[in-house]
Image 1 (spheres, rainbow, N blue to C red):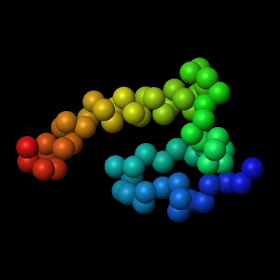
Image 2 (image 1 turned 180 degrees about the vertical axis):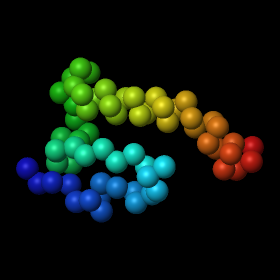
Image 3 (image 1 turned 90 degrees about the vertical axis):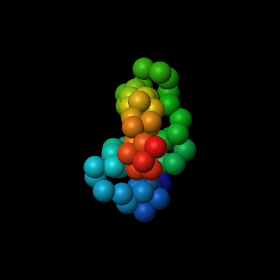
Length: 65
């Protein structure tokens, strides 16, 4: 397995914006989940749902809408 280089894995945003989750996987494994019960799937889904919930407020705050 070839590890994902840190420069490729992170956006280099402040910790308050970017959640950094270590994953022992290569590029292919990071985007493929074994099933919906996999811990990595549940974690990714949780953050995506949170992102969706917060999106309207974040856009309004940043762009004064």
